[in-house]
Image (cartoon, rainbow, N blue to C red; front, side, top):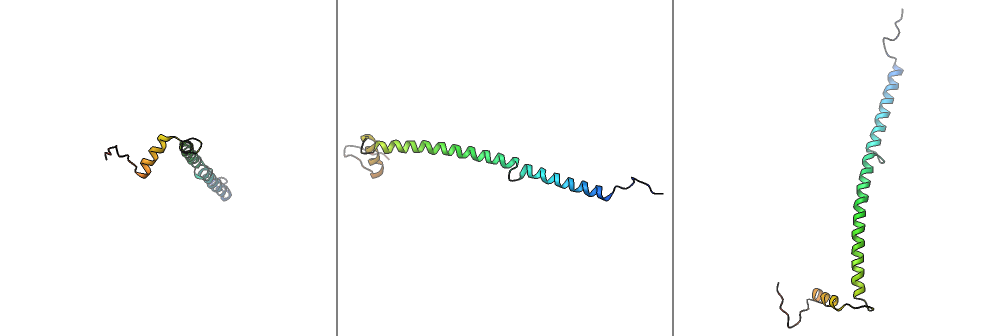
Length: 100
């Protein structure tokens, strides 16, 4: 007589092995894949860094725009012009003392 159920069938083992491999693959892809959890965290951090840099550059652009306007033909800020001449050209009046 044959005994049933003493050895698992080969088809059942193969089915379980494939199911285990597929679930492992999908779990790995969900965590470390191109659209996985770790990649989403990295994208959010990069977006925050780029947002901070964008804000810093916008402030710098406003500052440069202000300086440009103050040195334009329509509006001339003599104090700023004097500061730029001293800084760029090294201009010093005769009655001034320079300390370095």
